[in-house]
Amino acid sequence: MTLPNGITIRSATADDDAAMARLADTAFGMRSPSRTQAPAARVFAIEDALVAVDGGRVVGATKAARMTLTVPGERAVEACGIAGVCVAPTHRRRGILRAMYTEQHRRTEADGLALTIFTVSQGTIYGRFGYGPTVRENAVSIDRRFAEFRPSAPDPGGVELATLAEVTDQVRAIYDRWRRIVPGAQARPAARWALLFAEPAEVRGGGTDLFTLLHPDGYALYRYRRSDNVNTAELVEMRAVTPDAHAALWRALLGLELVQRVDAVLSDNDPLPYLLTDLRLVRTTARYDALWLRLMDIPAALTARTYQRDLDVVLAVTDPFRDAGGSFALTIRDGIAECTPTTSQADIELGIDVLASMYLGAYPARAFATANRLQAKDSAKARAIDEAFATDRDAVLGWFF
Image 1 (cartoon, rainbow, N blue to C red):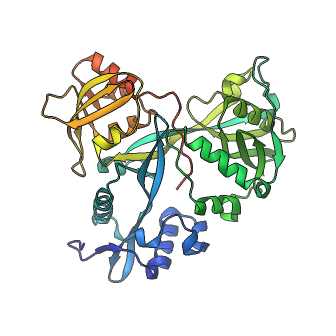
Image 2: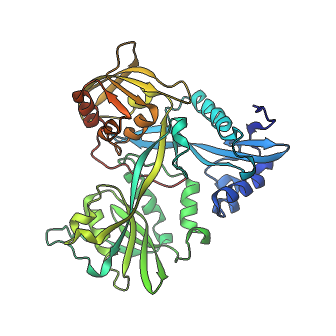
Image 3: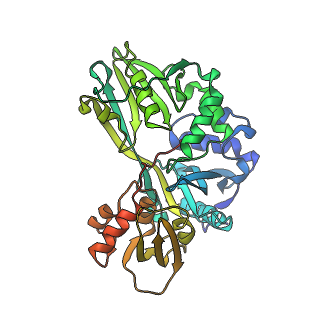
């Protein structure tokens, strides 16, 4: 594909590797640890990437890989994961991003994938391509010195100190159990495990290498930092398959006596605050989106997950970017959906980005209705779709990409 200004969009080759790395480092303001990885160890293969080329120079790029995503109902769906989207600062406002995205999404449609997922660096760009935020995270800081567990809080024990090298197989197995039951979590490929276990200095931010707490049904990976005379334990990753594992791992983390503070990322309804005598100690320092999603095929996507209540509704979905929109009859019985195109009058009108945000259950339909981004024929229909798309488990991003 060639743009009117002579810039060409094409598949990347091994010869583009260094130029793509330089462009990514410039666009994201950091040195990516993946630069030093051998091609076979990378999550995103060079042959699946796209580049924009101007006179032989790479001025834009986007990478893609097939991922396995868990959706509500503990179902696994094959999705396209997009990463590393960047345009050179010398070539902005020339239609490069739209051209790359047009070709990327054409390929994803040809592959028959119902979903595309993306960890977004800027929140104002991708709504026009039909993406909506679909996983939410809360950065929290806990003053460990004053943290006390309620007398009724579980104290199951079972946590052991370990080195990561000793328990890599157990950690991988626990993660795989966890991601199969949590919406938003992805299967983690070998290349991503290798990067986590290697812990290159670029990702430590001046902290120590990883320490490990292991439970039969969970693990916690954390590092120590010291800044302004404050000793902090940064929880890099906790995956707990059971409530007992969650409580036991937090008891161990909050028992690190020479640590003043524990920093972590929690989902909206993580039970940690309710285990403590003072829930205010779990202080939210930031709240942000962790994953964005686009429905490539609305009937395929909506029938891939399960639901919380029966529903009969006609959705009129607007897609500003591709041709995935239209009117669809969505019927749900006992959690199982059928979805087909229809010419019937719509009960609910919404953008495909709003439907994407609702898809994993983190963003409720009622909030979009209040903001007039979801228009319902009557309040009963709005309430019904809100209840149907709700989930028992918070959506959580499995690993950042």
